[in-house]
Image (tube, rainbow, N blue to C red):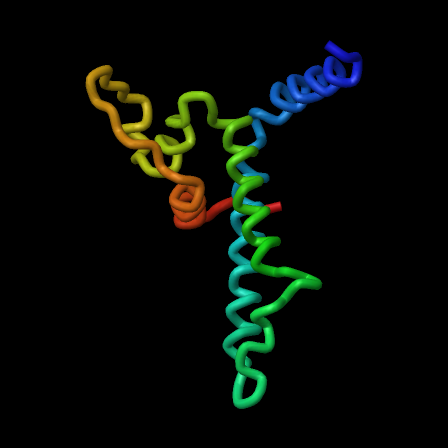
Length: 130
């Protein structure tokens, strides 16, 4: 194994251990940013009229749609660091009532939720502030 790879692994482990307690905030703000970029693209295309219809279809310079997509993908990476590998703690924190969060039934299995759904539940609970 190369030294660069070893250092990269050390960095990843350090990052994982350092950020784990506070990583819900970056997840939430990434979702927030992705939502804003998606809304910005919709606002741009909603303004198209007459000969300008389709003007933003080839938005290659700023590529706002790709920025939103990258931010959503980055949410998955952040969730892996904070909620992985079992992906149930954040769900319980933001979807379950205070009384039901700590009840763990061994025979009950639920499907995992996707990042967008988790973000929406965080948002509904008031999200985070800087």
